[in-house]
Length: 533
Image (cartoon, rainbow, N blue to C red):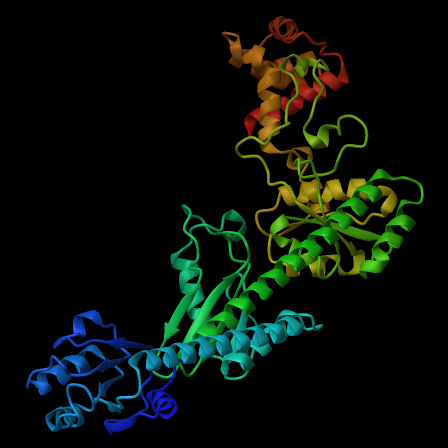
């Protein structure tokens, strides 16, 4: 805070003539102009000898008061032996502090004094700010971490403070905090300014950022809100409020607290990510089926306080957005980011993965089917959770999002359990789906619709391209539904069996396959079923 006029009077031996002495002095100006107001900013102590002043003292004083000067120092002993009575009267009437400056007091000495007082005040502010930063830093090193910083911040500013998460929910608050007003304002900004934080937070937009600082002011309270985090998407917020406006020192302290809180969040995030990667590696170890993998996994997780469930257990498959929720209650690890439910043990993972090798069977000419997700493909799970069988459904129902649940399994059959959970998750429409219920719906329910349709299109393409494909497709279906019995199939179609034999010979030629092969029949039946759905 700038020095008061009283301090200048006391230090320089000036004589007060009119007005009070409680105004602050931010600078000293010397002018002999009749109207110096255009050259002033306000809060100056104006010094003059009055050598060019006329008789309009009231107008002179009014212009100075309108400009907001801190006071007028009148030097006596040169043009005037004493301050003109009319000037004293005008100053008293306008409430302008008026000081008598003795002949032996140089104006420059007054300017130097005010400059020294301002420098001392600034040094004191810096010293107090550094001391407050030190106390905040020591608070950040306490076990309470961010909560201790918030408590210390409230004490340093003489008000209250709140820590909020990225959605605006209060995580820690000090007594007297106006949490409702802060959360309402943050919620409003998050709702109306859904712009830059990406799909991960459910917010869409074109690139606007949350304000670097938000000030809220009322008649009896001043509040500052700042986002936390080093990226464009806030990882949290904190707010601090006080009954009086924040001083420069207070703003420095608030900014220091924001830096410490951001650092704590970023470091905590890095530590959490390291733990998650370790759990990811543990899951890969368990899926490898290597001898002693379970014992080694338990030894690795022990220092982290994490535990693997005892057998038997179930596997839950959820989206990665639910990772933070499920990892707090059970062993959870992220699945292969490439999109596979389980990294294949050796070669293709079979029909449940929706894959075929090029050249295998009649669909070989179309190449591999089902690698990339096509439009309409089922959702892919991002996280596998291992939960004791007895509490599996309880945990699944508390997640509140789509969950796939495997049949009970052990570590020897973990790969199959993860695959079951992922298949069930793919069939979910937002609730809990158990693989057992999904399997009861037949083979088609276990496959991705997009992959099944692609397989069907590739296999039946020669028949679709053939001119009378309707007869061939219907004949093929009747033949398969009759288990290859000519008479039954011909009767179902209402044609002579020789006509059916001719059609099936054409089907064999177009597809280049052997209809007496049970595997070929199964694939053709599946292709026809997929085409019909």
